Length: 80
Image 1 (tube, rainbow, N blue to C red):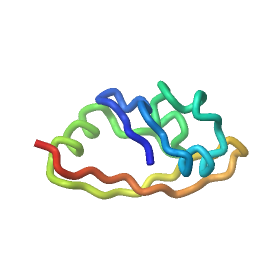
Image 2 (cartoon, rainbow, N blue to C red):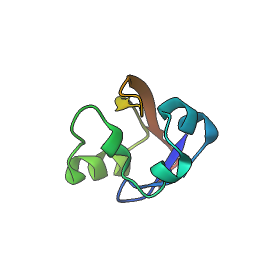
Image 3 (tube, one colour):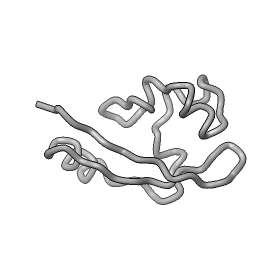
Image 4 (tube, one colour):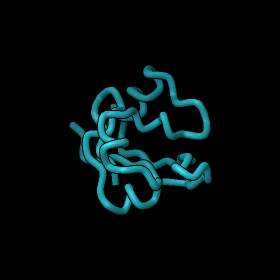
């Protein structure tokens, strides 16, 4: 699990996410999560439209520290 702020920077990561990507926690905190994405990120406009809408679920392919790719789930719920 990761928690990102409005700029998509990682503000918290759990141990499972650290192990999944193979980076140190300090290498993840403060970086935009899409720096690890295989595909280009959504534009800021598309991102804000997505998270301001209703609940959402998506998958994203991220690059691990060893260069391998892993698919993760993105979701949000309970926003005002």
